[in-house]
Length: 223
Image 1 (cartoon, one colour):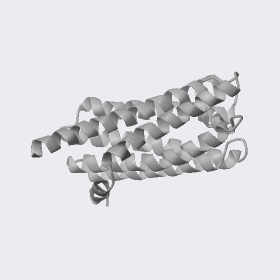
Image 2 (cartoon, one colour):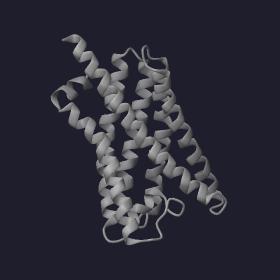
Image 3 (cartoon, rainbow, N blue to C red):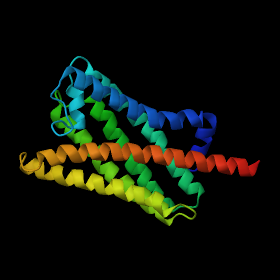
Image 4 (spheres, rainbow, N blue to C red):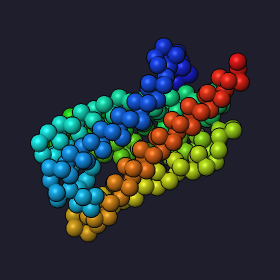
């Protein structure tokens, strides 16, 4: 299945898909943050979760919800792109498939985070968010293992995945504590989620740039 996705990328504009996977989540979330901060001076990274943007004033919530829905779509292409690249590099198909399925689950969770705003559908929102975080925890681990065991892939490339995997673990750890005692680690939970978000975005951007350069180099060599 993943091998055949190369046909899809050939039919679509690969560069636009890469650009979308980078720009859609980055710009949409940054716009939501700026709009929220403009309309509510109480916003900060130590008092709000990422999901709180979905409850933002003056249309900020709608911007965030649309951003999550769009992000869920483009990240699926990212996971497909990365998986295809690693398979073509003779990576372990078992690990890559687990990583891709985990990414798909995470993207589905992202979609429903956009559908169910935290201020209206708290339980459904948290349930959806759990798919995003647990899926992310898994795909970062298995993509990192895949890169570590794939020939001619830099070990530093794999290391970046383990770093984000650890940040997923840290946030899930603090969130689990907050579930039983909401006051014990609340600031740590806020901060760890924002650190995770920016690290994850950086990981996606770095990987898209890495794959783009590698594919461009291969195309030049084949000419």
